[in-house]
Amino acid sequence: MMENYSEKCKKNLLEYSLEKENYKIALNEWYFYNEVIDNNEFYDDNISRPSCELCEHEDLRWQFIIYNVNNKNTLKVGSSCIKQFNIALMEKDGKKIYGKDRNSKINKIITLAKINSSNKLTFQALSDLCKIKKDLEQNNMFIECWTQLKTNGTLEPKLALFIINNFIECGIEFTELDMKIDVKKGKCADQINKMPESSYNLIRTFLNDKKRKEYDRIKLE
Ligand SMILES: [Zn+2]
Image (cartoon, rainbow, N blue to C red; front, top):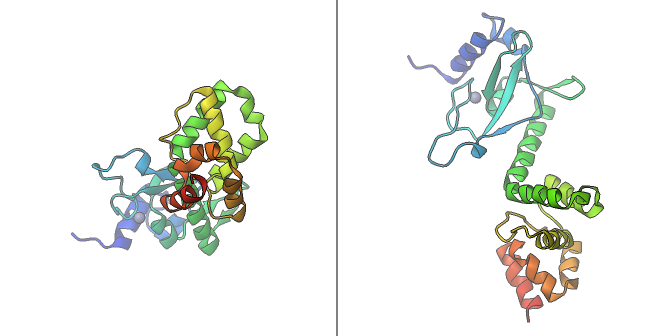
């Protein structure tokens, strides 16, 4: 028998809820947190990723875990089902948010998760660095690097240089890292312009192709 989207969802939802008849009542039993599973971390390109446990939509990259208040059941679902069925996002203070506010938070959660996954190797290398140079964790420049990578996904040129010099000092391989340098802000251009050629040579691989060509012409004359 062919089931349409909402029939599938209702059936799956009622199966795991305390309420067994009315799906609108059942929906109130569910909520999720500010956390998302990035299935790209666990599955390679040849294997299809998991499906939404509500609508059975296949091959999802992002899954949110929804929790049931009554029976502790969990379901892993896609963001479109959360939006469609208006499932609550539970904030740290226990407040539930719905609708537009929740949807824009979902988008932010996914954006942050993307940033984190794109800098995975860099974060790993930074952790290795901290194991060797323990005082770095209290160093303001290092903290600023960590913050910029977490929030923007990129580093200012002078901070990238600071990190690279630390990698060199500690013998950590860095040339293949997925680190990206911020080139949008005016102050970033300033920082590159003021760098001696030897410093520029260290950071240039982490510029995007277009900017690297541009700066190569200026810096490596
Ligand atoms: Zn779904």
